[in-house]
Length: 205
Image (cartoon, rainbow, N blue to C red; front, side, top):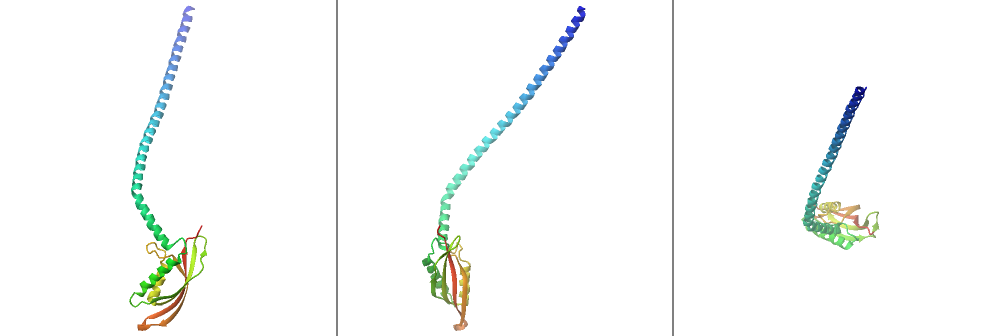
């Protein structure tokens, strides 16, 4: 009977040892896996932090370089803005500025009349009341002109190409034209024509 009890206790102890060993193994595996996961997360976070810090330094350097480049180019930008504003004031002024428009037309008349075999004479300019459109204003005017055929063609090109920044010619378009031909000296065809033109300027807000 004593031997039987001893055997039972011995088996019970072996079972408890195996159970304890299995529990220790489970705890060890759990701790190992937990530690590995935490270490991997830590490594990932640390790598992300290092990458972000490097990116921030790169961005700081880029910002500093961009600011330096902008500061160096800023005077040039201001110069270009000034040139564009000056040209814009000529082609699309903030008032009807018919005085400057008349001066431009007079200069063009003088330029054309100096060309060999050219006739271009403006006998009358009649400005009408300005009108407001949705996004701009219009200064209508009528001109009576006596011209050779070539000068007439050049005049049409001037109006057609008006508004270009490089030429600084007031933005205009031709709304109507009436022609009368007469015989000129030395086989030069003379054209008497009346044109209705719209000159544009900025609308007051």
